[in-house]
Length: 312
Length: 276
Image (cartoon, rainbow over the protein chains, first blue to last red):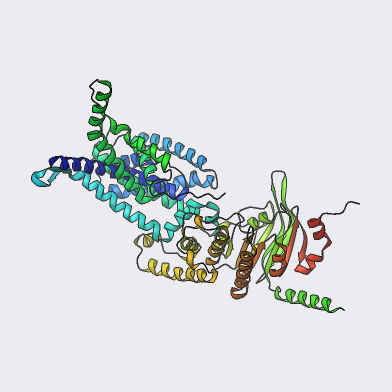
């Protein structure tokens, strides 16, 4: 019985970590939905938002003020990106916009370092970091921090999914993603839509930055974590908000299970085949990408992505 | 006068009277080139209130370019467009859309991932002006606004007889229905001028008849001015009040269907000139 609880504990802790990937993936999905572009700068935006937030805190500002000012900074950033970059690239091929986002990413990273320096900043926003023990005789441990992160991610996703489906602006966002020209012809203001979507992506980046930052410290490697969002996106589908969440859960849970249970099983198998005993580790590092690769082979639109139907 | 001739004269007069509305859109000396190619060369014509105006011409005559100038996708290098009392060197797509110019495209441009209903609802974007915050809350005024616009879209759906595909993602629909949904999206904008770029291309006879009927009903019941490009001469002569003929970017004729049919330039353009 305790084995079952241990399995559940591993699975849950993996899934909670997965929701944190989802938070990053969400930012990608938003911009992809609205402009059909993979925004390479999303990871850097997570880092930059966290840097600003922690910087303001260290200046002695109250947390609420720091959060509001950071949101304002991200909105200003959205305006700047639209005015200086996107506006000039209307109707260009997606690959050109993608290259532009790479440029934006490098600029923002340098800009962040210029203002806030390259040091690691510890961040504590008061999310409890204790463990709860549940189940018979406390057989299972749940980190409160992970649970809080999962709840926040879930709430954000619900709100965004509803917004995308039931409001005029949500519809306009999807319309812009589908066809720029058609969107223009019905009078959707492309520029305004881009500002909105980059602002929302900036806000999501802040939430992700705060959660990742209070777990790992605010540091420049945060922008690398964005890479973990890639398999999540491939799994969930680039265009699906709920897909980002489910993808995160599967990747998070899957890689933890693979690490804890898969590695010993694989080691046993290898020993049986080769006769050499060895211990395997680090499956966690690459497991997500292998899952992503299988998805690309068999279901390239992801679990929830819009299937691309081409008529010949 | 022979009886047939009298009838024809009568027809022409009726058509002339019907299209006697004042100009709602005036294009003067429009020229547009891409690199060395002159797509439109010094073309002027006007669109009169309440008429069905067809633009015809052989392939590459500059018909679609003309439509793109009218709704602002292309900026002509010279000439002017007068609309709503404003004389402009070129149109802006947003200005066009928000002042009642709606259009469809030659190669269907629908929001493929979205349902028929959602596609039509995007046509209402400009009619809904509750702010971002209200939209987020989806509460009170924002919700009322959504419902009102939904009701209008339902009327368009009834009109076009597409109730059955309301929830279907449009990417899955057959070609003829996609064309109809695209017309629906334009109608949802409650346009004053409707630009249709080959609304019947690739359709079978039945679908063409349906589409012609919709176009005429829109024109008659809502008084919408219609500018359409079409290759099917039978359809053009049946439904238009006036025809503008382009060839190699120049206007070679402008008049009622009968006048145009009898015009020697038009016959030459379509059938070729005899080399003798």
